[in-house]
Image (cartoon, rainbow, N blue to C red; front, top):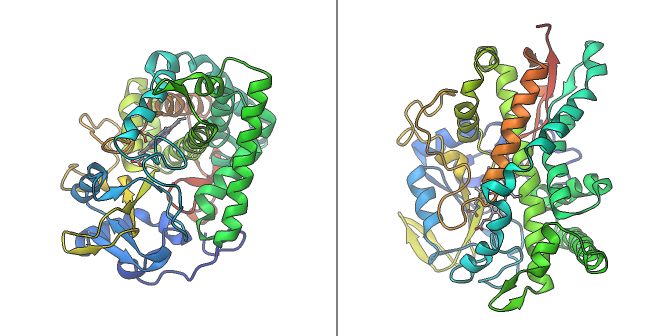
Length: 412
Ligand code: HEM
């Protein structure tokens, strides 16, 4: 995408990524791999005055160091925006991702049981059925030789459906959840007053859902959070609501982006597609390699104390982007880092983060990603990009993945 039309953003395009980067520039996600490679070689911690001051480390060593350093960096806010949110540490607005130690571990423990492998495995038949249904609805277009949109009509629809059902929210509101995701993650260049109104709409929706669960109790993740105890007491509405917002947002955009990027890779790499179709035993390593190379999630930290970070004078409340995807492409850590090797044997990637905030939903994410790829290539063993790279659009901001992905299904 070369224009900012319809993105509801207000920014000056970037001309120098080392001194003036903006991850909300549409060129950032489209060209992220090249930008990170260039910076890693020339300016491993870039700085920009935008958003009140933002740092961007691009080596695995630096990303790791910051992720593990909870003294000098706080998770009080993890999405870079124009205003530093007032929510005080250690709880933050969306626990546990916005919580710092020592509270963080307590908030995290509460969420571990519902995302344990045994609980998530139970979703396999449902996810498979969902993927098959989505593919069924594309068949008419495929039969007529039309392109299909593997991002908007497939990748996007899978996680939003699963997390709405887990939370016990109306499925008819799925499009609204996608708007919330867009508002939170892509509306970062909105003026603070506009952003406030949008976030307030999300908060009010969640409060209404919690009230509905009080009136109509049912067995789901929302009821679980409302019933669980911390330090001998039920959670506050703010804590329940904040965690639900986290699950809704973290559950959707991330996995949608990972599925979309994996299908984008296969559409562009017929040899990898043919190998996967011919040998399903490669799926687990291919999934991990897609997660490494196309890791969708960059989180942020705020600087907690003025300090010097490898020669960079970091000041309280400066933003720091933590591009786990850039760490995954560091040639110091991964041999042939820039190559996609779908049978890569050793792959200790950091797509799910590093340190205490490591992703809680990784079992669910892997399940959805694996099934989405399996079902897609089962149905369409041969496909290619429908159009050129200019017809593919990419997300804006900290979560990276294709938003429109035209795919042409080919005869077997
Ligand atoms: C491919 C998909 C996904 C990726 C790549 C991903 C990545 C990440 C990353 C990098 C973090 C660390 C954040 C930080 O350090 O600040 C994280 C945290 C988290 N993720 Fe995911 N995520 C994915 C899917 C999911 C799903 C499906 C859920 C749940 C529905 C989820 C729930 C969470 C939660 C609750 C945290 C916070 C954990 C904590 O603060 O202790 N994620 N994720």
